[in-house]
Each structure stands twice: as structure tokens, then as C-alpha cells.
Image (cartoon, rainbow, N blue to C red):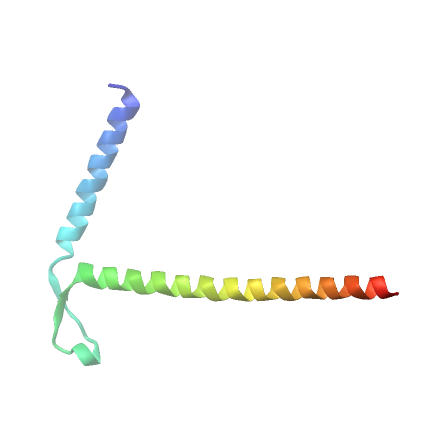
Length: 91
């Protein structure tokens, strides 16, 4: 086999090993101190996953609203350009 292929296989095995270790180490239950969930325990990996999903949804929401503002601004500028052309033709 080529050296690059062997290095890729070794890197993939290392990544999978460390990912497995990370997941298995974080499965142990930890206490949650949220007022509604007082006294409950949940795996740390679940907490990490939930915080990741909340962050991803916030970024998605932010991108959608920024994109909507940019689209609205672009549409308004196109309307202004069309109005300017109409006034130039009349003069």
C-alpha cells in the first residue's frame, strides 16, 4: 500500500479511538442544577449534544434574519434604481 493510504488509515483509527473514549467517558451521569429539573441526573454527553443543538439553531436563526434583512435592502435598492430610471426618461 502507499504511505499516504496507511497514514490516512492510522489517522482515521486514532480519530475513532479518541471519539469513542470521549463519548464513553462522558456517559456517566452528572447532576443538573436547573430549577425545573432539580435532583435529576443526565449523561454529560447529552448535555454537550443539547448545547450544541441550541447553538446551531441560534446560528441558523441569526443567518436567516440577516439574510432576510439583506434581501429586503437589495430589493429596496433595486426599486430605487428603477424609479431613478423612470424619472430620467421623463426629463
